[in-house]
Length: 437
Image 1 (cartoon, rainbow, N blue to C red):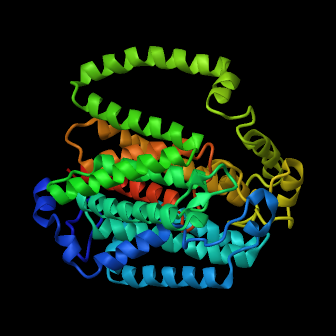
Image 2: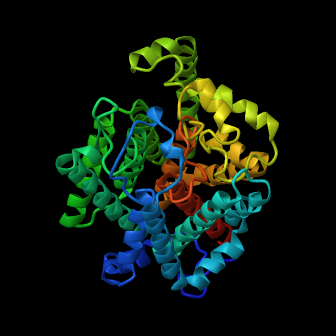
């Protein structure tokens, strides 16, 4: 497979040369389409809108009743804006889609699930949003090559974080969750969502290469506010994922500087204390949970996981339709709610939620995509790889781990799935570039 240069007609490519990126550095902000693209990225970042009124999920089923008319109108306007932007790079997006068709497999399966969905209208609407989110991720990859994408995402992260700080300072009813020990959530729907998304912002900031004072201020703002909100969210999941993100980021940088023989020796030596740590953690898991302020069920996660296995076994191959399992007291989700006593709208695991929606039909291609990305990510040990490839590697690893305890995969208009797609696109592009050399 050959790789084309960055043009309007053919844009499936890996990371461009540093000289090319440097030549264009800063120019993207002088282009008219950059700002609408930034607005649409922020639209995805906040999940399609900022909720002005919150209630504890355990007190009612309103969270599963669907969006209001105003929320639907806002999401429709956002999706329409994304569609208009994508039309300006239609040929480049088509080139990527033709060369990496597997990126469209999951949206296609989501649409197909209309035929067995518990709620066909819900499935059709959300599958459309999933497809547009996927295509918009491809649009950004095409539109901003290499380090330009990091610069773009860093600015988006800074704006979102400043919005979070503004909400906490001036609209605490929105920015602070009084139902969860006054945890900070900013413009996001829940403290765990806030923490995990801020971890993504933190990773972006760590890989942004500032070339001037304004860049240093931008990077410092993202790193400071992201860490502040992770801490103030009081999300233990966010704290653990942050430690993991730092470990992966700086661990990769350390290994990259070593000759390959030293790397092998280092990894072999590192495996010993890592194995011991995992063994000790398994033996004293309850004590560890108590240390970080978690109960043995990890806030009902283990109960929910066991409960959703029953409906999964009933429909293991096709699931209940994309975005059509969690319907409150309607359908199979009612049994889960009665057992757990929680009005949950997710399985607290991205992998289990994919099984609930699309069964093995969805899980197998998802795992294949992630495995394909990890294979390419292993090549990030190459010191010649760009910052974009290093960023994609860390993001992918973080989100794979995070989805064991939270649901983010295949969520339409969701920043975690959006970042996963961007990471996979960057890594796939680097794979094709290497094959063409």
